[in-house]
Length: 371
Image (tube, rainbow, N blue to C red; front, side, top):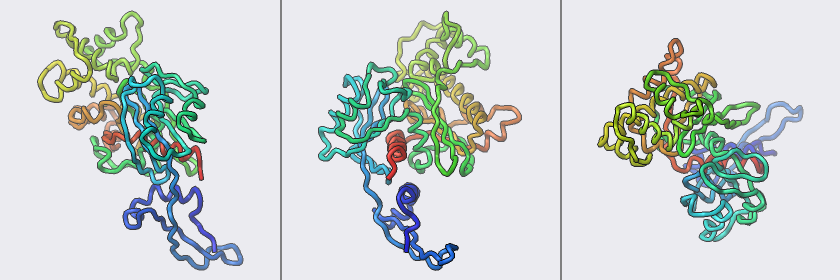
């Protein structure tokens, strides 16, 4: 008698076996069989109850503003000991993770980190911070035998198949197509994106540098904004508009267009005023911001034929849900001429879960260190 679901297959089943876990916590069903002498189909099948693996890891989701840490079961994707720190509180990732682990009784021997920076070479950093560190320095701070690093948007893309109803809000109707590409884009300190595809029986996450692509104006007002943001360089990257500092730049540009004094508000204050409907210029700023975001999201959905769904996450997404989940966003999203009906059928979601990046980093770490 052999066991069909074995090793890595158990891990895949575990991630997708929410109904089984609901009725039998900590256990998984596998199928055992007796192989026929001729090697053909099994003669008999019977359910076998198997205990799920318990591989825990130190997981981090590290951005320029916040550093999130948790202890995760990297096969069940369960999260415990969740903590959030301001990145500026520490001089480096090794210092931050060492501080976090002071409150953890037993340190796992695996660690995985999603970082807001391309993961190339041994020396790494975090966008919008002065952090610089090596894999060996982080490994020593964790006391871990194995450490994996992944780009933060690549990690976020890994989380998409595991987000459930309360983790997200659907802002454009439609049904996702199984196996079709999925994309995630988002804004905070910077703008980023990644795509999740299925190939050769595996899910593969691919991140790029979308935030550095040139912003394209679509009307006269946006052309004025482009010129103001680009300044003397003649080039305005998307993240100079679709980011926290981009909101401030939009706010200042719109004030100038209206002949108003230059405002001195930060992105957080602008968002708060707009959400409370207390300032027309702040509301106009978020309207403009979301229109540009919707148009870009539609462009990216067409480029990748993302019928598996488009997700908007990170940073300010939960705060501006009022502006995302409205007709202005949907009209701009699907305004693509003969492809409008196609875009109207693609579901769009706003990610609300603040641990989605951690869960994605856990998936990437599990894939990097298979059982």
